[in-house]
Length: 181
Image 1: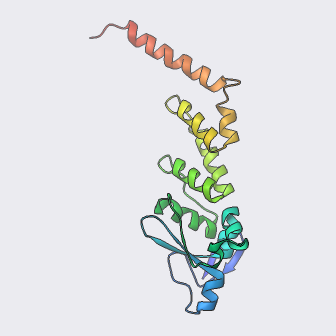
Image 2: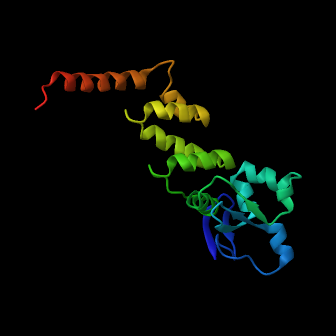
């Protein structure tokens, strides 16, 4: 089966995520790993594909870490839907970012060092800033080192927050002045 263009270009593979690798245990131990979520769900992946997308996995599979020699890698704190999205991204260079998954996806991309996914999530958050989430997004951006989002929310310039605080105050003040019916 030919996978769509991913980080390694066009590739021929007999393995797709979630399906077993070939029976050869030597081939399996050197080229594939399974990633396990806290929920127990397992994803079968090529080490080279993960390492090409993630500095975290690159270090894990090339440095003298115990995971270099293990076939099963347990990842704590990452929901299986998010890990599935990242594994799919490793093979297809496509990921669905929604308002519902963006924060969890950015956190996982930050942890596993999928830098392009983290950047895409950051741009998504910048486009979806509003008066209801701007204060919370500032602390989230600082914690996860999101410079584009931090710049948009910068307390140095206060542009975004000042403009929206005025609007919020005007709405609140108008409600106080109107008689209750």
